[in-house]
Image (cartoon, rainbow, N blue to C red; front, side, top):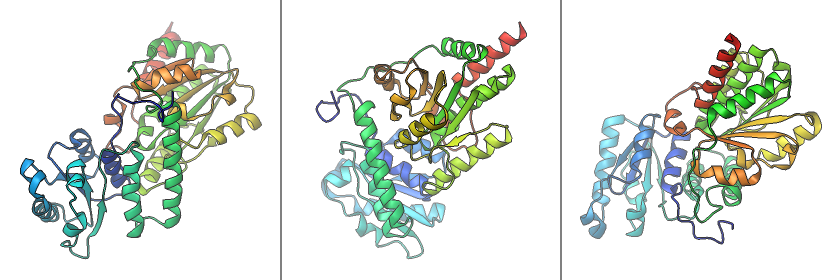
Length: 373
């Protein structure tokens, strides 16, 4: 049953949090959540590790009735005092939006040399991508992104929503979380494929900063193939186009591609940018049809469920996700093995280099042990 026709009761990403991450990707200095101190607590704290100062106006039950404009104004003054920012975002929450707080009224007191984005959002949208657009539209109005980039982002967000409705977290009324297949079992099987001379394709189709760990899966595949002397049987695709995306997203792609180069990893095909994971399926399909029709297996890391299944007909599909609720839908799609990198997200904030993955390290370890025997 599609997400359009079912009551979805498991937790899903919040539009407010999506707004915060988008502000981070625009390199905004300070985000002020106009709401209670606990709103989006976990992600707000995590983003402090990733160069975005997140404050709260700390609305309480009294403010729910009489309004919190005075508190927001004081929080803005404190933010300017603490951080001397060049840019500030005032971010709505369920509380402030329900009672009709006007963010622009408080924005008017900020000096002209500070860019102020008023982000009118709350957590009640059906799709968290609404929170992204709540940032990008005023950002375009301030000239932080072009009209063309706004149009591009709107298309990508719609496609990302479609992916989730079709085969992601919004595709079922309830999805049971799962840790997926055992990493050491899958790693042993992948090693067997490489040692037996099978041709293996590796595809990085990751979302933004999560690529710092998902890239390690391809790195481990390449290193293992080199140790076994079968790297000619491996081809790698990566959605790390350094010319596409918001400022922080392009920076992530540059960091990853630079590290691939330093470590001698050959990326045979660039399939898009780190914000294009939802639309790379057609490119991957065309490449397989035109250049790589005879491969035996594929390792997909990042957002595997966004890729079309038809091009992989006849291949074993080994996929790596960070979503425990993604395991069942991917198995139903036809992914033979699904591995979950459970702690990926907190490990990929505030960094600028590839970080080790559990599956990647498991593959390396088993390969090293087997070679010593």
